[in-house]
Image (cartoon, rainbow, N blue to C red; front, side, top):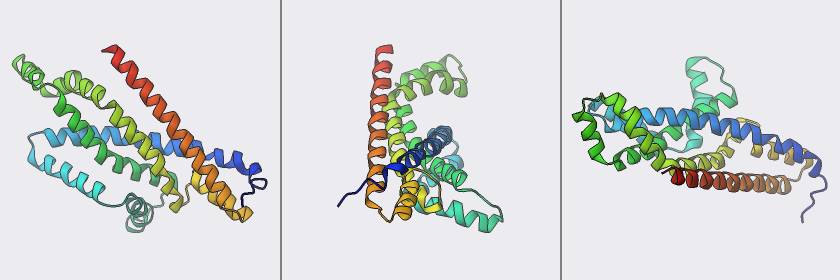
Length: 218
């Protein structure tokens, strides 16, 4: 049933996809984190148009399939705007915009979990809202939500496999290529599955290590 003899020479080629996957996931996470912070601040702010926009944005990106968002950015935007976009930038943009919706909810929950008395004390001392958020509230919120952010990163790492639909040479796409060359798809896909599993275990371990260090610093 299994015959890995013809697949073994191609394992290094599949492993090269780890770099592509991590590049997409890390870049998308940075975009998602920065945009997520802005969206979260809009959601808890008092400016209603910004609040409505942030809620609408989150609703759209959480309420539609990620693969649809990816294909719209890769196929539809170039058609409308008459521009050419490569698979990697399209994947990073799609994953970043999607991740921002989820991260904004995580950050909002983290901000709301910070003792309200600290905000009241900052206001009483005349500390500007932006400085209060940057120096007092957000650092505490980020520490509280670190496990949730790590879970989002791990989820993004697994979901990144869908970039194969637009031809990005990640782990999954390379497994498909090897399958097409050898006419055996099961073995390279199993290898891809093992790689994703090991990556998830490593990221989970790193997340727990970071969480323990953060607790010790308290």
